[in-house]
Length: 69
Image 1 (cartoon, rainbow, N blue to C red):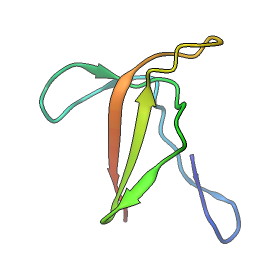
Image 2 (tube, rainbow, N blue to C red; image 1 turned 45 degrees about the horizontal axis):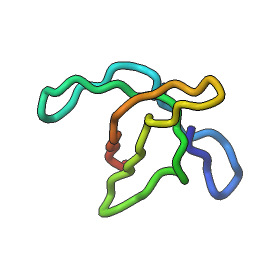
Image 3 (tube, one colour; image 1 turned 60 degrees about the vertical axis):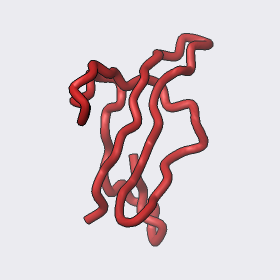
Image 4 (tube, one colour; image 1 turned 30 degrees about the vertical axis):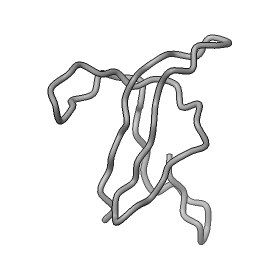
C-alpha cells in the first residue's frame, strides 16, 4: 500500500503474494515484504519481495517495478 504524504490516505495497493510476469520470462513469485521498503528512482518505484522465511512469512523471488503517474 502507498499512502499520501499529505493526508495519509491510501493511493494504491498491490498484492505481492502472487506469480509475477517477468521481463525475461523466468518464473517468479512475490511474497512477504521483509526489506526496508520501496525505492523511487527516475519515475519508477522498485520493491523487493520474498526471501524472508521466518515466523510464517511467505518466500518469493521478485523485484517489482511500477511506473509513477
